[in-house]
Amino acid sequence: MTDEIARRAQQIEIWSSDSDSDSDSGSRYAQVSLSRSAINHAPNALTNAEIVTKYADKIKTDPIKKGPKITRDRSNRATVEQVLDPRTMRFLAKIINKNVISRINGCISTGKEANVYHGDHEDPEVTTREYAVKIYKTSILVFKDRERYVDGEFRFRNTKNQSNPRKMVKVWAEKEFRNLKRLYLNGIPCPEPVELRSHVLVMEYLTKGNGQPSPKLRDHPFKDVEEIVHYYHQMLFYMRRMYKVCRLVHADLSEYNSIVHKDKLYIIDVSQSVEPEHPMALDFLRMDIKNVNDFFSRKKINVYPERLLFKYITEDASVLGIEDNSDEQLGQYLETLPLKTEDDDEVEDEIFRSLHLVRSLNHLDERDFQKFSEGKVDTLTDLVGTHENIDGTLAVNDDDEEEEDEEEDEDDEDESSEEETGSEDDSEAEDEDAEGKKKKKKWVEKETILKGKKHEDKDDKKARKEAAKLAKQEKRKTKMKKHVKKKIISKRKTK
Image 1: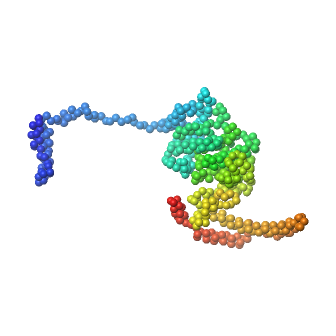
Image 2: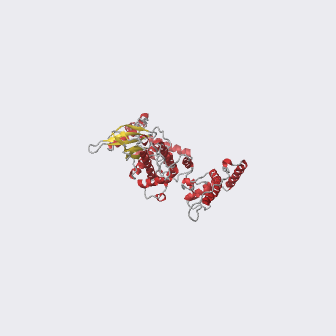
């Protein structure tokens, strides 16, 4: 066999580096094909049929079997009562297996963002405890503006995929759990948070017993006016402690999100609460103050002006002249505040709600930024308006308001001049003689002169408006351009 193979191998032309290069490619191909045919027809060589027969048992021609086909059945994602789907049921099973609760009895309430179910834990050695199981809606979202409560908050700065409803709801549940924990640890009455699994939150259930929930502040039967004032002050105490101690603004505080439990006010539903550093925190706080005042004013009691409550909540204790945030200290401070009147304070509160709140250099008006760039303003507090009604916490940014202020100043000067002349006459009438006795007043008839815009002459009114228009045009000439302001802000951010 080996001799035959050697003899056949001699017929193969071996191409090497020193082979002649004169032969063309066609002849080389012919020689190689001849040699290969010689090998194939060698004795004892296997034919194609024999090769197939020999290796047939080792070659499997059947198609590769794949795994089970994945069928996306809609029933796997179908929900009961808009919250209970198979995925949520698995979370509830884990909570029950962990022995946090023993069973879930039924639905307590339904809302725009979640359903709340009643659960309890039976233990022979311990008194049966009742829990509220809050399950957030993932499939049908009625509450779709969640992002404005999360965007800009430092705790959730790395949160992504907010367009995905399921992932956003998970962040929302975590947000409420952490906010409740913060309130509970700082002594503000609220339901105790117990367990969190994705979008399922378990917390204490505020109940009278036997599954009877404690009433909301809206449904609480007040005994008398003193009880209404008591709960009003309690609400104001909690608002300040939430802001100064817990570093939170509720952002949806009202009679619907507070419960009277065991003669004490409890705060609930803090999923949308934000920190004071949030871009809209002060706007949310202003809204909370309005909601609280509106409810208690409907209960026929006198409330405090909103602008003064804003200062009471946001200012430091040293500015308010109190030592701590105890009920006694805060109650004593509230007693010093004037109550709200029907006409004047309502107008001032309307102005307060419409004012722009200055929080940082990015929120400055252009004319204020011009002063700051020229070095005329040293601190951020100098940029805030100093009007009495605003208590040094807000900035007025409208040019029209400045114009009106200038006109009011002119009227005030006229009125003050009248008052000065009148006061001089009064002082002359009330001068005391050497014996310390007052002289009798000398009544002098005064000529009544109608003053003010209402009784202004047409020509004077036209001239005044023309002068104000020219002054406004001159002011626009020195106004900083927007693109220049943006460049300066971007430079300061990069530093």
